[in-house]
Amino acid sequence: MAASLLGKLVGQPMHGPRVAITLARFLPDGLVSVIRDGPGEAVVVALEQTTETPELVWTPAMAASLSAQISTMASELFREQMKGRVVDWDVPEQASGQQEMRDEPQVGGIYVRLFLKDPKFPLRNPKRFLEGLLDQYLSSIAATHYETQAIDPELPLLLSAALVSLLRVHPALADHVGYLGYVPKLVAAVAFEGRRETMASGEVDNGNHAERTYDADNGSSEQTQTPQERVRLSCLRVLHQLAASTTCAEAMAATSAGTPQVVPLLMKAIGWQGGSILALETLKRVVVAGNRARDALVAQGLK
Image (tube, rainbow, N blue to C red; front, top):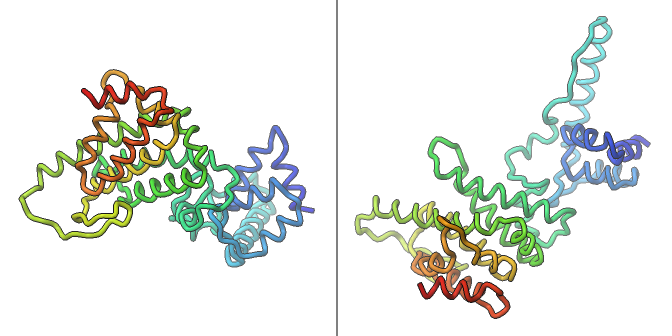
């Protein structure tokens, strides 16, 4: 009955969003969605079982921790009220039951690493996940430009891998990227990372040869990559996947004053360590016959 009542409260048009935000301070987004969808019996089952999916991580231990926290909060509030005081009480920012997952990268309610393990998992809202990935990916790249910001150097690579996997499983989402205007931002990011790595190489290159490793994606042996090289290749992989969409390929042709042109950029990327095949395949994709901006892209190459 309580679960059904919560479901009705969350679904209430006026106050439902506020109730959902309050519940999200205690429960993972996945469980809040279960409460919203109902029925109450399904909510009770979800609360009692162990679940590990890209949308929900929940265990009996987490349930017990949350139950203990709520019990303690209720007891403390009751004691204060019994003293005749007016208590200015608010719910905590996050319940203890979710603390064990607080360091796990999460975007749009999706645990990124768990999604990469199972990219075909049927997401409730793949568009929300896509938009969140794009925003956080561009932000994480920008954060690597400033040494004062504490940023996990693996985060941009993780987010780009999730983007590519999502677009492979849901290719129609690539058109959505084109409509939202992310393509010029991604092209600019590739161009900036390319210039940044060139400057870094000029500063540190002393003619020494680095240890060689094998890149399975590129299918060739290559030198150990610097962090900047890994980031710019992650950008290139995202562009490569988006180029399969005619909408995105046409968006790549749209340039304005001061913005980089995609074809010269891809031609330059052919010489990047580990990027030659990706760059060539991306060039092939953007100049397909169905692209209405094909002539403009060819003109970029001829210049």
